[in-house]
Length: 212
Image (tube, rainbow, N blue to C red; front, side, top):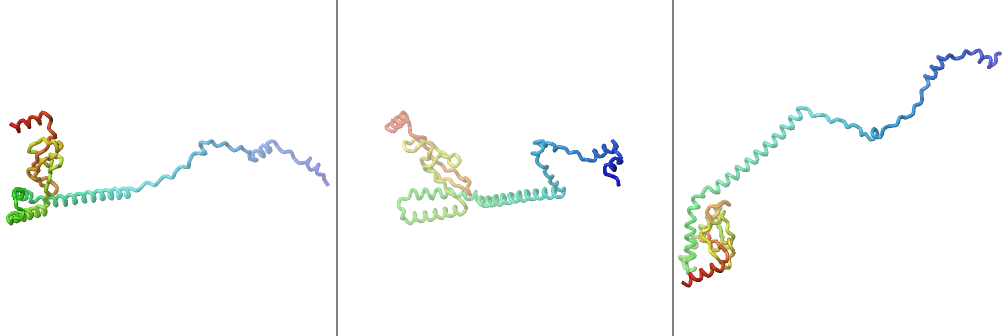
C-alpha cells in the first residue's frame, strides 16, 4: 500500500500557466461604484404622447370652423330680427310726427279751459286721451322735462332765464313736449333753461328796468 505522502509526492506540480488560468476563472470582487447624487435625483423620462393623426387634426379643425360659423349665423339672425322689429316700429314715423301738433293744440286748449265740467271741455279731453292712447300703441313716449337737468340730446333750449330758486342748467319751463318713438328721439322738447341766481349788479339792473 502506498501512503498518502507518497501519493502527493508523485503528483505533478501545477504549471505557472495553470495557476494563471485558475486565478482568471475566479471572479474579482469589485467595490460598488458610488452613484452620483444628480444621477439618483434624475426623474424617469416621460413617455412621449402619441402625435394625433392628420385625419384627427383635420376633423378638429372642421368642428371648430363649424362652431364659429354657427355662432356667426346666429348673431346675424338675431340682428336681422332686431332691425326688422325696429323698422316696423318706426314705419309710421312721418305720420306720427305730423299728428304731434294736433296733440299740442289739444293740450293748449285744455290748459286754457276754465270749466273742467263743461261738456265741450269734456269732449276735448276725450279726444286728447284717445290721441295719447293711439300714440302709446305705436311706441310713442312723451318727454316731460320741467325740473330736469338740461340735456342737449333731448332738449332744445329756446332761452335762458335767471332764477333765485332753480339751479343753473335746470329746465325752468317747458314750451313744447318732446317725444320718443321706439326709444329714439322723434321730436326734442322746447324748454327754457335756468342760468342760476343773478348777481347783485344784474339784479339791480333788472329792478331798475322794472321800476322804469
